[in-house]
Image 1 (tube, rainbow, N blue to C red):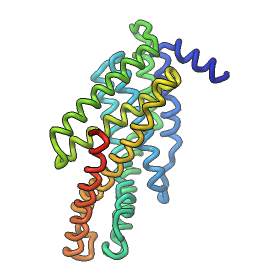
Image 2 (cartoon, rainbow, N blue to C red):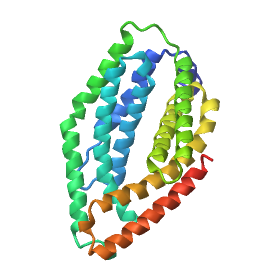
Image 3 (cartoon, one colour):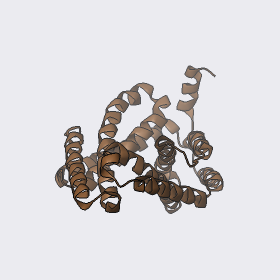
Image 4 (cartoon, rainbow, N blue to C red):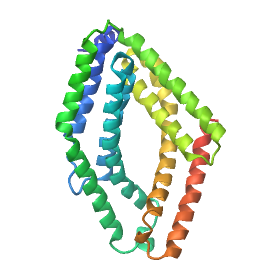
Length: 273
């Protein structure tokens, strides 16, 4: 099927059939990941992104489904993604400091191995091979039970608008909170991701209207991602001071990371005025 016909069918599509068409490739991607002992930070990152995208789809379709059930599914996916994120955090930390000069010999590798083993255990316990297909089946059933037809194009516009309005509120709260309140700015990052993912999902239905907005969102997400890396590393190492060669080194590194976090926060904040 050529691109023109695919876009024509997408524009005519019902929201009930659009969900499984978007979700199934993401479920397959998650199930395709095999996190072995030598898995890279990028592999953990890709798994986490796929899980986040599924969570975004669940949020988007929440008005057509049982809200409580959807929020339970999203909370489950959040916990699983967090486990993968914790494993990746150690690799990110290594890019922000001189591990050979500042960390005690062998301890960082032990900490990384422990985090990866914990992540694999969490993923194993989550039983994604069964839970994700079951989730997809339940959502499809819910959409086909007592739901009137909802044109996908109109549905997409409403959900993108809702996500953009939510992002706007988060930006306003962050501005009021000031540059010393990281949590509010982290919420901006999460809101921007949601809008970006929705625009990417729905772009075939309005290619000219959505693709043009993605560039700015990607730039914002990159800046806030850099900020999150610095803050996460600062928190991680402050909780594991035993990894440093001595207390003086610990204080110096954490002070440097704190300054870097502040610098990155200022840079990210400039993007939203």
